[in-house]
Figure: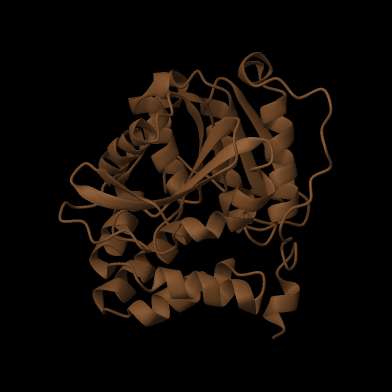
Length: 288
């Protein structure tokens, strides 16, 4: 995996494909490989960039506390290093707040944003309780348990689980905790109207605890498209990768910036992804 020296730290990243750049941001404890299905299946038409947040995966520990503001500066620095002037930014779960912060801090650097199971604040007892439980486990230094739980929750197969787990356990537990802590205090809901760029809000139909956040974002963002994945739950990049990638592709191709800057070729060959998700729902793996 290539590395970049950014803001006094080293970031491991992957780039595949050409065309409109889409930069993906992972949530705490996971790392860039949670977007492997997007890297493989969308890179026929787009330049896909994934990276390990500082202190996660193969990116070394951060001497500075991990904050959303620091991560947005890392993203800007990574784009500069890769000579990417403008991109679509995509955040998954709590990392969607990092994507929103990037759009607020550097609006000229982004064509638009994609929020997968996203939120602009954490304000309900259920989601707060989950985050606090993970913070408590981090305080007890239960790194193996935490990484196993997060990896299992996002895995669509045993193979995906072991890949996610082997990568996630390399991270720094303190940086994981700092990243989680930000999600409890960050709130940009009052500033959503400042984001003029087009936004795709994508949720699993059965992800009921995040329905309220979908409504908050749809109300606050002036140029948003809200879509639900039938029978989907929270883990859209892995367990529902097929419909997630199709909806991302449809949305991007409909955007004016795409038609102007990256027009579709006259003849498009059929897409043959290197691999498909093991399942587009979680039940087969749950029975193992």
